[in-house]
Length: 215
Image 1 (cartoon, rainbow, N blue to C red):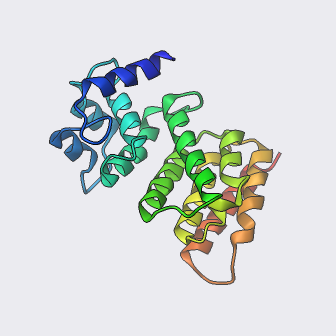
Image 2: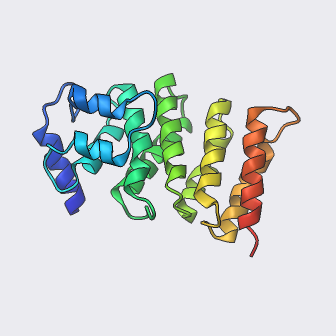
């Protein structure tokens, strides 16, 4: 077990549980769920500063993001906060591992059964956060494109989220040309003749992916 996982395990053991592994205080929930703007890393770090370990803010949002027993709003805010803890590079971090594990888990579930409305929201938040990491990794492009269940999901909201994530993963010029071309080829079939928000997102993604696909 890595040191990071040991720290997170210690954090979970140190905080009282109420149906889940980590029970944030009302003040910590308020810090994560402010209405006007997403919480900054500094705000989260201050809110969780009393918890054990050298990086309690990071450890807390990783634990909250991966716990489906948490309040849905808290979990989604934690998911969206994760990318702040790995920029400018996310590969090999606890943040990246958490997001890819969650997206892969929901993707695999979709191969056999529909997700609940709550899990669809969790999936969209995880995909959005993965895109926000700007990892540029071929493995992340594969995760979103190699199975049709995400880009071709019946929900256009899921489709748009996956399209935007591919764009964010690879632009500007973060992915290899081959990965950009792979993303563009996966997104292009989603275009329709309708003038919709979905098509607008697809066209923006195609423009950026085509640019970074140039050798």
